[in-house]
Amino acid sequence: NPAGYNSSFFLLLHNASKNAVTAHIKILGAESKLVYAQEAIFNDLTPIEIHQQFAAGLYTVQVSYAQKVYSQKLVIHGK
Image (tube, rainbow, N blue to C red; front, side, top):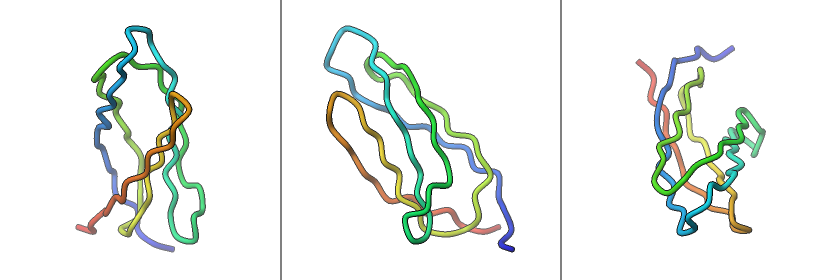
């Protein structure tokens, strides 16, 4: 059972539209297993806080909005 660490970080998303947009945020762990999901409504450059307990490791953050999907790697280091 891996130790969990309180992790808090922000996603800063760009929205070219003047209207609020709903983003679907997924964080995938090993073997693309879903470990976190959230929907967030945001305007241009609104920071979205992710506060969750993650084990140390490599994750993929997927954000989808405006009919596009964006992916970024995330590394959580142990203490």
